[in-house]
Length: 614
Image (cartoon, rainbow, N blue to C red; front, side, top):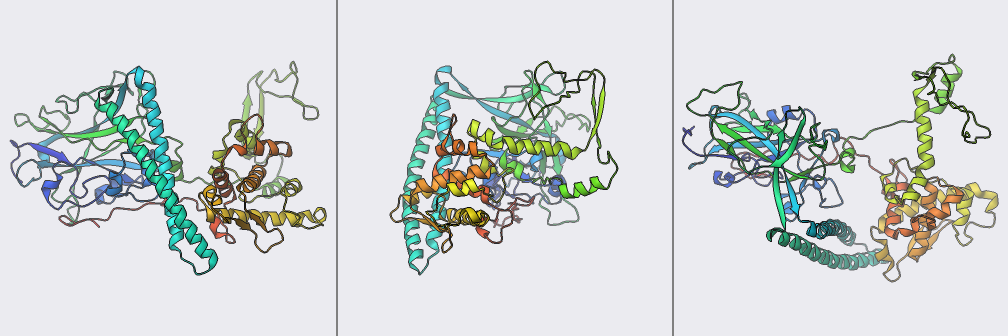
């Protein structure tokens, strides 16, 4: 090691990865002189030990790791080249989402050869988390909000169209020798061309929107203020206040960094001969500002700057005191990131939760063979005038003035599962009402408590007119027809899934049709998208256990917008999601796949110094 006491230092990213998303390992040390510390991702709470054992062993960033996903596949690995085409920031998930992050940096002496700095020359290492907040004049606030909303919508539309193009190109690549296959190939080629043109238009609009935002920023109408978190005298309370990029005196709250020391028994350790540090990135803290707002939220853009403090040669290093009065060397800022919301769909899917309903026949057997009170493990104590007891006649609600409480204390015992059964019943009862009143039909695609198989009653089977294909003995064999309807919905979901995702565009093509249950008694061919949308609406209404009175309003719309307000593509997406089975051997096209803890986890390949990464 060279004597670096009089030489300038550079705090950069680690040698093995020029950016958080990877790329090529450093082949010439000069290439790493201007890199920033990187963010490394993990899915294991034991990430610190894994990092120390091998710094390079971390997860690659996928489409879901960005505020605006790159594709419809959340597990698609994003390369640095793809990342360069979009300015959307990273999205860091919470610990409750089973994701953990560290920042890693490396210290060099900024002279010829770019040598490492001896670790004992550093008396403090840490990092600060900052945020950049736009300062907009009131006159431009509305315009900027409109542009931001427009940019977000255009980006979503562009992602959707790109996914549709890929699907059409896949269908085109699957050549077939029969007439039906050739027609589908020709259709896919035409559809791919149409959607490619749409993608170009969306890209132009997106670029124009970004240009307008950039122009406002360059003209000074939008100013970006850099803020750092400064603690107050109260523990856990602080405020975001304006801060300089590289201040000489650090007044922000500092998060410590720890040395990455190579295992002396492992000659191939990535920290061998290197001066590396790492720090754990906080994504959720109990800290609040003076107005009780959380320190971190899912709306602001954050970044990290690492620093080391050079040991002042006139003072001894004090192990229990971080500030030895030496110069502070700052790194470049990491790329910006946002924090995922607590109920983020991708985040919550990282750790699936299994909830099994009580087995009522087994409970019945236990109750019949057990003494009274067995299993009533919840002790409910109601203070005086708080028991909320009431009696009803013919299930009528109690009238005002009736005694609803008891004067004395009441103690009751219940089995825990009774609370769960009642809650589940109320959930199923109010689900269609909630969706209808607030027009929340998109939530059906979350498939929460939706029966994976549709069950039809006689009324719905009768309302779906199949031009007499059920035969004259319909009323006498309703059970058989309900079974046919169940088979029909399964095949319809399969056909819609195969022909999707844009059915509306397909129906605009000449001679396009969808045939369901071909060769069976209830075969039906859809040549009109309106007829298909009508049937899908009826089936969805039945699938959420809507009553006969509600079914028509839900499909056609009453006081609130009904399913008729949705497009055919939206109806098809909801129908497929509701029909999907978690295990469907008969219809593999509808076999749903629950995420597992290791879904989408792809690790970086280890690279050796002066060798390009794979």
